[in-house]
Image 1 (cartoon, rainbow, N blue to C red):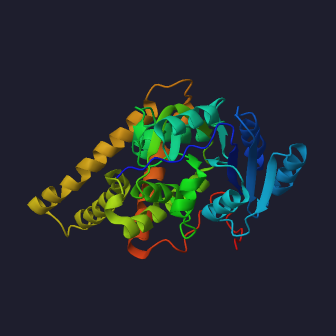
Image 2 (image 1 turned 90 degrees about the vertical axis):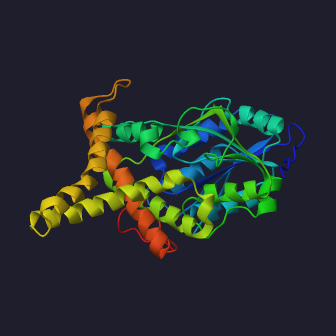
Image 3 (image 1 turned 180 degrees about the horizontal axis):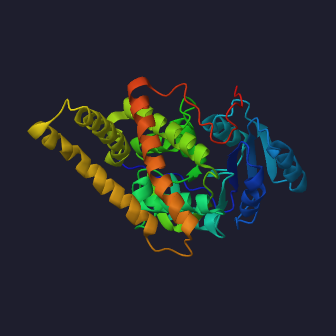
Length: 357
């Protein structure tokens, strides 16, 4: 049975919550886009500060001194859901807007989201994540993010019709619903937003997608960090499949299927090269190469596809970015499905040997 979320009186105020870790190059712009939001009533932005080593914490304190709406809480654990819960509990207003230090809210984002929340009596509303890049590599990653070929066609990675959704990117949420379902699960380090929205939907509330809402997202700047990010994300998706089974969309199983095909093809190739597999059996086994050939053509088509000011270096990076994302995510998924993900940490915001609590 569908339940309507409470609609607070107009002008009741908004709490923005932002987990932060090693984001000095992005934090100020992210915060400025929040402060520029047109909100009917009071607002506050609460930064949950992880143990950064790049000057982010010092910058956050400078920003907090410049505007009384900015408040800081310490997130010593460095985990995103822990930081989100700390920020939510420290806030005081009935609507909570999740923002990311690697993202920038479009003008009018919050006002539009509040209107949609009230109209639909939804518990959570989100829009489109529009990835952007500053370097050829980052632009190639952004192109993959924005393409159904890259991230599997989730509504918030492209355009689509407004309506009920499985999850929401970032999200504008009612505090009463968050308290009803128990806030973010602090045992989940990646995919915490999907898991929260699953509990929201199972409690009978609506999660709503509004394509008129837009957030700019800046992807990882280096290949190694991208791979580490996607491996951790895939591992936690495997963990979520272990926990919630059929609650997961079928699109999550495409990358691990690709990994399985690559592994089978490698074994077949070794057997054929060593002449262990010959004759008709070798010919039949070669069928495994067909879907991989199709995938290679898909990657090539993705790299050469027309786009706004796509240069040669960006197209070359696209040849590496797309399979790197898919294979890292798929390999992580297989590991998480088999072994779980409780010890897996996304280190893509850290230097390789940076210790975490």
